[in-house]
Amino acid sequence: MLRAICAGAALALCASAGHAELVVVVSAKSPVSTLSADEVADIYLGRTSQLPGGARVVPIDLADDADRRASFYRIVCGKSAAQLRAYWSKLVFTGSGQPPREVADTEALKKLIASGTNAIGYIDSGQLDASVKAVLTLH
Image (tube, rainbow, N blue to C red; front, side, top):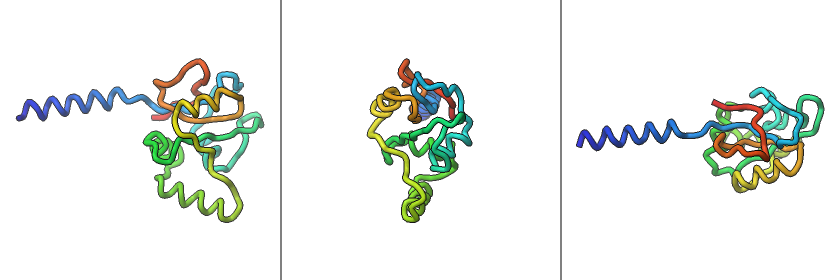
């Protein structure tokens, strides 16, 4: 019995150690090479619609039920899913802003970001490819 518990604990540790980090990505064609967590938070909370340098930016979100989305907002913005919904409800109601565009999954997100130079999103680092580049790694 103890051996089974130890084996289960070891497997759980290995699984969590293998979990990829989240990275914030832009198109591989974008001139942006790095962003700070504060800059990303400002973009995703609608405080700015521009990248450093003045280029327009369009934030792309994963679906509301995605674990990566909850992790992203907790790390970058310090907000839970409930806090985020309340935040955007207030801004939408007052006409002060619209939440980021939402896509169903990581592949749709990467395809949308790769198609232009003004979109930004977040994915697991293991999903990076030549179509997008990481500008911030989240821990």
